[in-house]
Amino acid sequence: MLFALGDYGFGALVGIVTTLAVRLLVEPGMDMVVAMLLGMAAGMVLHLILGFLAAPLLGMFQTMIPAAFIGMYGGMLFGMRDSMNAGSTTLGAAVLVGAAFGVLVVLALKVYDAALRGVAFDAGR
Image (cartoon, rainbow, N blue to C red; front, side, top):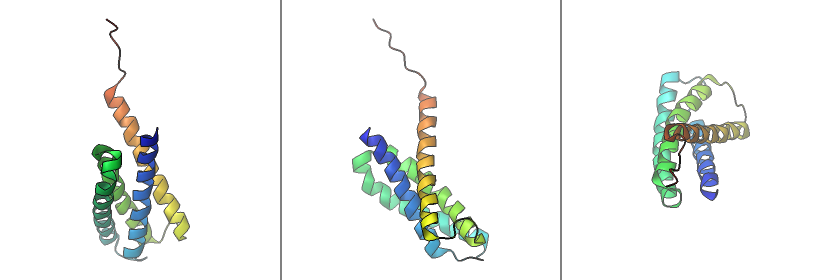
């Protein structure tokens, strides 16, 4: 149970840090392609740093795979949003969206992992 909470908390942390980095790098009106590339690059660097720090506590697979999706795709989505000056107008709202995105990505990957593993049956011999 604690590991699952740690996974979701770490996903939210990566989403928040990525959101804040994109807010610092991307200006409203910036070219969207440049903003998406900057956001993706920032998310990739940040997820590597945070993932290596959290991996001894939570496990490498549980930190790096979700963090890669959150950092790369979140960075691109948040960069696109901020370049259009759309969506979250306040910093608090942007942080909340980043945290929610991180939690949703972790949840989606947990559901996908469960679907891949399938139901386990005990032979009972």
